[in-house]
View 1 (cartoon, rainbow, N blue to C red):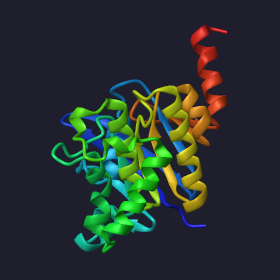
View 2 (view 1 turned 180 degrees about the horizontal axis):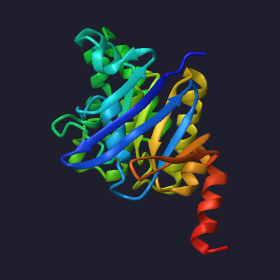
View 3 (view 1 turned 30 degrees about the vertical axis):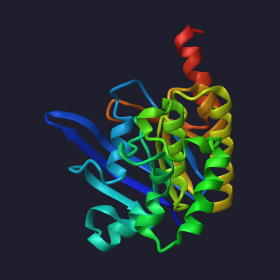
Length: 240
């Protein structure tokens, strides 16, 4: 089975500060990988490097067999449609309504008619619990949690094969957290997508990830089953 994401010997520096040195990571279909580590260790930066938003890294990043660094503009545009991105701030377009933000990738990358766009947007809004009264509301006028849900819906709308999510449930109420977890699990099972996400939420890591990697000292220090690693870290912190 071919990998969806393969990172080999990735290194990256910001100024004179080394952020990563020799990072390796491979994600297969339906893999759900949690990146764990303290603030400032580079979790979000790694996602942005993979997404092509932060240039300057050395090593190799392949998405479904395509080498990101040497991909042509046309190949990279095709790759973009296979990526679903969510960052902590949501990054919704401020002058577009919630509905139009979610619909944007469909309108930009496909020839779907407005009837199909409406159905797919409406279906995702329903699955994620985004109330339809928010359809024509600008992002600044809705709660932060709803903006996060809209960003997740926008990331899923093109049915991508690789999801890159930065703290996907931060700021959400418990019911929404449960809904997001179930939505992502169902999506991965249905589409065979891989998920790489950052978190410091032990409950989320234990519920959603099948692998967890601890970032530190410019690399992935340890990886394995989330519950085992989290249990081991808890024991170390308690001194037992």
